[in-house]
Amino acid sequence: MGTFSASTQISDDTVVLSKTEAGQRMAICAVDSLGPLEHTLLSVVNGRTPLRYLVDLVALQGAGLPDAIEHLLNEGLIAIAARDDTRRQRAHLADRRTGN
Image 1 (cartoon, rainbow, N blue to C red):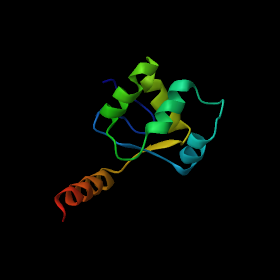
Image 2: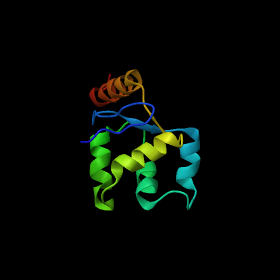
Image 3: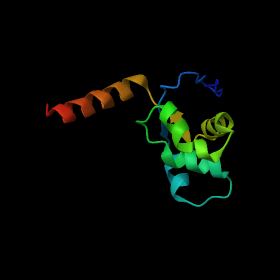
Image 4: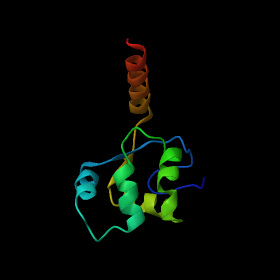
């Protein structure tokens, strides 16, 4: 996995990306300002799934994923989820699975 650069370096494929409010609006609109890969990536970013799984989901779209992520970050359509948020989500899901 390569390094993605924007205001934050993303080199860890366990990082979780989430849509911003602007990204949520953009994801439901057919907007020509996004390329097919960017639109697909924006539609699968959910704030819970690590980057490595998103790579698999969009792999059929071809190369250019680092550029697409950087563009979406720079445009403010996606953001890096806080590690504490993703830990809480995983703990909540684990509790639900075990019935706690």
